[in-house]
Image 1 (tube, rainbow, N blue to C red):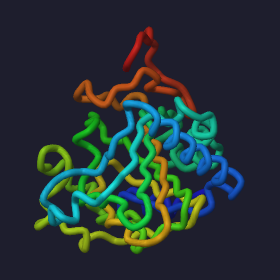
Image 2: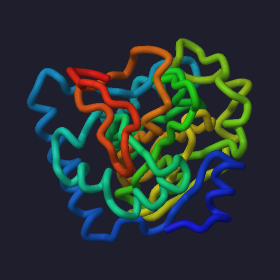
Image 3: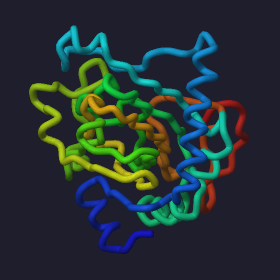
Image 4: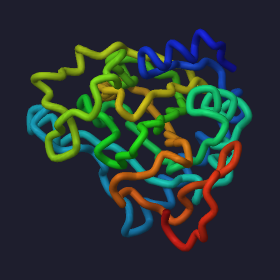
Length: 254
């Protein structure tokens, strides 16, 4: 899927957009799964608006925004399990992370039309910090994404600065790191944006008449250990490729 030059681009810039990782049949299968999960969740007490709060937008605009975000979607539909271990995904992450790769978690982020919530600039690191910073996100696009419907924006090379102070662990100071600093990463359905968990990224509000549906898979080297016991799920550590060099008995969360 990617060349050595693209691997070097990722190392230098902290992100890489890979085209056509999934074909349209695979995209449609996962898109339908996302829609089913939203419907099922709406009938339970676990449904919620996952839009971030803060002062990065005016209060009157903030209260209108909606984000559907559910973690560990591979527990809910097998299409996401197949996606996590898809040969094309393995090809990319094994070249960037190394021959041994684990799945840390997955999550679904859906911005509905017209009022899909923004994500201010942030790093993912505060949520699940690790020793060696091998963690990366693979954001799978189920819809064509552009600035109008809130595509991801990244600051190239920002991963080299290390972990920065966040406001309440959620986002960077929007006056110091406005979204306009980011490089937009428009993508087509089936494309995947890979980025290091230290890379500063964010996205604007979905102001279009189209949804923006994504699922993220977070991958790591199994020898890259967490520095905090946080963001744990009971299926953590699924080997995507290679081997886990340390034998231990897995009971519950890792």
